[in-house]
Image (cartoon, rainbow, N blue to C red; front, side):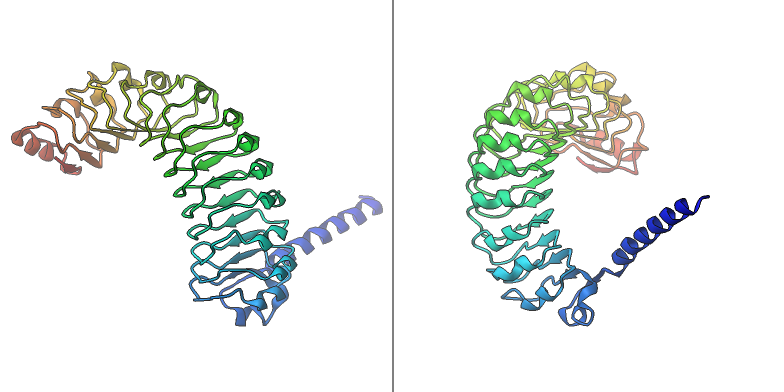
Length: 367
């Protein structure tokens, strides 16, 4: 090996060792007093449930701070000097006394995660676009009614948690979040979705449960990366064709007039949850979903199950409560995978209930 190559190799090893050494020296602390002993080594500071009613100004001494967790305190505002924490990437402020979005946080340009869950924030400022490196934003359990137009400029956002607010509409710019992978916006007041929603091609997990949606647009059938789709407790009575959602493994819906047969092509589906539907019967093709491990069909007017149902032997949890079944015994062949079966509210005889319990003694029955 030439001297030149040896020198290059030495420089590379030295550089890597410095980075590694720096990472090793960044430690996690659980008290300010301990952290102040070696402030340059503080990479993570966790001060959960410390009854803090103000931001501890001593934190500003930790110039290498990457993660700050102040969950479960009584903090209502932040000093402007917080912008001195140039290296901060993760800021956890859930369950504090914030009534407004802490605007001084907007100067933390390197933030990739911001958690403001369980506060009393009502409005998100237009300036939130300044946090352009955000990948994860948690705003659930607040009193937010809308999002600003600038929200769509959070181009790097991958996870967004908005559940349990009072949001009644999303801005048209919402579709600009083209790196968004997980969206949880259940328990809000959405009546429809912006047309730009169709641009969210990267979505993997979507939970729209407990809103006021009346339909899902057809473009949902083209969101080919969707693995989880949950739309229960809306006013939706029919799903669009979902033939192209080949990655889908979990679907949740309620109030449907007909079983969504388009999902029957997806033999990799593992979990189906249907509530308060008017199915009366299931299509025979459901027996092709041999990967099913959770099947919930509550109050779906089922009088019987299709022939071959007993071949769905990967099911671990089966909930058929509130239907009109008079027998279940013919639909159970193997009990080795089953862990829980709920048959309450059907018309199964006492004798059959006893027989089921004897046949599958390892299964927890609620009948």
